Image 1 (cartoon, rainbow, N blue to C red):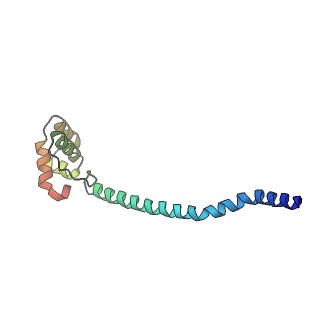
Image 2: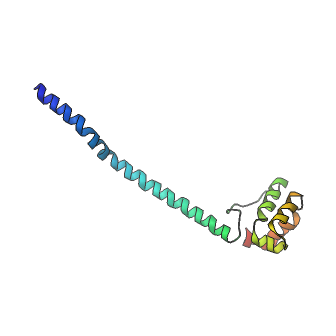
Length: 120
């Protein structure tokens, strides 16, 4: 009887590393599937942002509604990266940014307003 018990114990020890992964595979499949879904959502959001950037919108879809001076300065600085705004101002990105940093926000903000949804 003790031989049988030893043999069963030995079999259990030898087979346990083989059985445990098989039992856990159901959970692993679910985890992989969920991560793939999450990856697809992230990918599609990144794709939308890249499409916006390709159209000249560097805001990544965010809406600028604050009228605080700091927020307006950030908005104008970001607008200096837009090819549409640069073209409207007949300047280059560096000069536009320097003007914003020196406090000349109005021309850039006016260009943004004139462009409307094309640059939002």
